[in-house]
Image 1 (cartoon, one colour):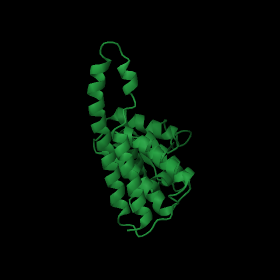
Image 2 (cartoon, one colour):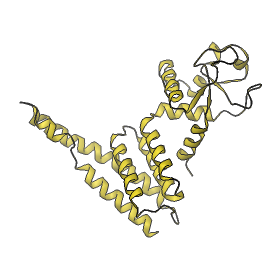
Image 3 (spheres, one colour):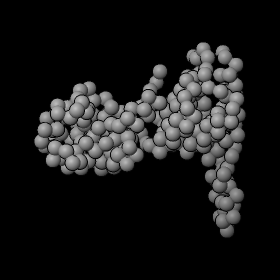
Image 4 (cartoon, one colour):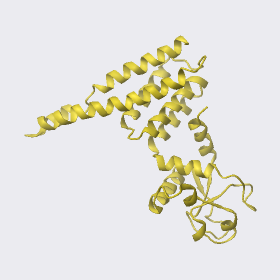
Length: 234
């Protein structure tokens, strides 16, 4: 195995060990009158277990990806790499789902292998941290549209719900609700779409065009395509 890859594994292992014993709220909790001690006893043990399990999964996911790599391109000796790893680890500690921790591992491994801009890597990590599974699912669903819609300059459009849509776009769009196959409620999907539009990952295609109402038809943006390349498993 490449020596740099071995070093990365060592760094991750040390970080797991360090973070699994770190109780960042412990001092403040102990200051609570009367019940601070008992609460600290409860939280310190459970928090450590949760922390360890999250970092353990992340370390495993990262190691599995790097063990099959012949060589890496990123400079793992520089300050940029150190800052990048620390930022990732802080976010892994807060990541509640296995899917999000896996996404962090994918981004880190891709940056180590391909040596893209550190600013780009930091932005990808930030997006993973800010988005939940529903956002990623919606984004990938819109990206998966297989054909463009007539009279839309080649845009591939997804309708929130074909049954409630009308006009030209309803005849050509694919249904986001159908793609989600009942995994999320309408309220959750609408909120996710709104948040993706606010972050520039989706564009509300109906506003000002084809007499469509807002938040009914969506297309992906260049930023969404860029982000999906970070999340793609090679």
